[in-house]
Length: 475
Ligand code: FRU
Image: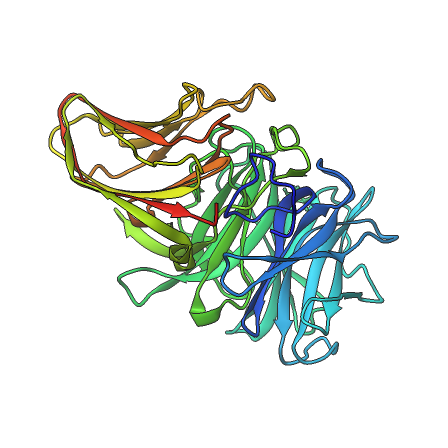
């Protein structure tokens, strides 16, 4: 980072703003070998307000160059969330290859606006005839624009109250409402925000299916904000959810929100990024000069289990490049408890653990990550419940919000062999289980990094057949 501000909860390998407040990732777009990340940004302080789009770029999704402000408020309002596309055929007439940004102008009303960049995102010019869409609805925002190949049209999905509206356009400027989606579908505990619409391959088949991402706040599985999604078909006009009775969550932690994907990503990849916080306490977390970081980038595909199709969330392969020195431990058996000596010989607190567990007959397979201050995060598979849990109630500082202590749970298929990847940074833990079949993202604020681990078994025994710790980042 180009900052001397190294306050202790600043992540070592997650994206965070140099100074000020950040929420949703916006307008991520890939062009000419460069990943662009824009984000909801308050440059004047570390709480929400004065929304701008900030900008950063990367060639590997790991190290980011900060570019400051991309789009600033104007007479139409502050700049809320949205998306970008590369207009390679110049359908809008701004120029071939223009990066065109769509965002919500927010004042006492919310309207949709656009801006374009002819210098690869360095500067944006606002479209002279903004706004491009208005409504009488109060919550009308977060335009996500995609190219739909079959109908050769641009599609915009908008979050409107507790629904999505789907529009189409030939020129990015004039939009026609095609359909609405939402009634009777999924979770409705709060307002729907930050949509995305994408096509993903179903692993092990030749099939592709459409996924509609729908962030909602509140109404998440552990309170506050969370990301749900629907799987189905999309014909250029209408999205049809194949399982209307089900609610599907993309991540089973409490700090995964506003997740959307990169436009124009290379090699047909679908790469998602979320905001690693929760509206319940985002403004109160104990950082000072900045607030919030993004999740790690994640590649999305689909898998099928018992006739139902789900999104599989895998840490993007670029993350392997972060791995520094590895410490590989010998296999061990856990009957009751097992303390690993020296999991990490230093206190950097930024590492990845990769482990494989082979169960014999245990009912609960668990472990604590802890530090010398008695702070610990406990994780366990409860095989009878068919769930993986993460308990951060004793993980460190939580005094800033009574909403912070939490035990989050993800459904798991109880197999004999279980694989887990844990990414631990200064103030977060992301767990990816069974090859991406569950992801769980939680903030933690330990007053000293967790550098020890201790395992336990209940009702039987198991073996940890492989266990490797990789130091991550530069610290
Ligand atoms: C989601 C959200 C969006 C909105 C933005 C404002 O976190 O509420 O709906 O555009 O944040 O910063």
